[in-house]
Image 1 (cartoon, helix red, strand yellow):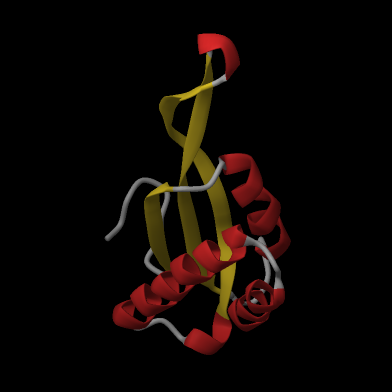
Image 2: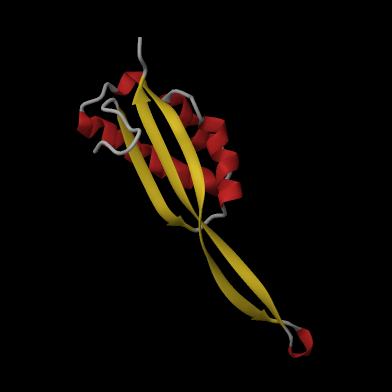
Length: 119
């Protein structure tokens, strides 16, 4: 699965349409960027945020993809972890005096790329 810019010693996992705003997801992903996979899994496990549970699943998927490609799991680190903006679900909720207020539920696309460390 070589895409533009992704090498042979890398594995990627993408979650599309995650029900969390990209800003909240980026707060968590910035903490694990450039860290070893084991350390990142531990950080996500103890972090008390909804985005941490979502990112943990995506990271485990990226690790499984790396294992399928035959990469050494002990040398893996997170090369790139991003949360891009997805579509916005727009709804209206009723308010007093017959008015309505818009509600915008933001979605995000979470991408994690793991790679082998070059010695």
